[in-house]
Image (tube, rainbow, N blue to C red):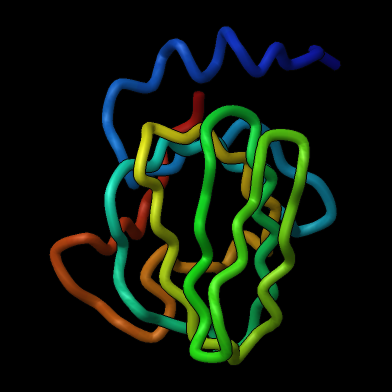
Length: 119
């Protein structure tokens, strides 16, 4: 067993919207990602997603209105809910979701990452 120091792991990430696997448990993955700018509207048919903001500020756009997530706060986006993450400043996020979760959900395009690297 090894503990994970988030600041050290995030220091090794230099790109945006490209999550890295930091740990796994019970079929779930703990992913670390840096976000900046807008992603795209998408949803996940079978998976819920947890977004925990470590540093920065995340605006989760939903069809029903936006939710702002500050450091130390998290949001769970239920399966099937269309959402679009937006980070106006570089934002460090810990994701907790099933290993099967594809970053672009129901879409496949140039931003889809099928094989995540471990950090």
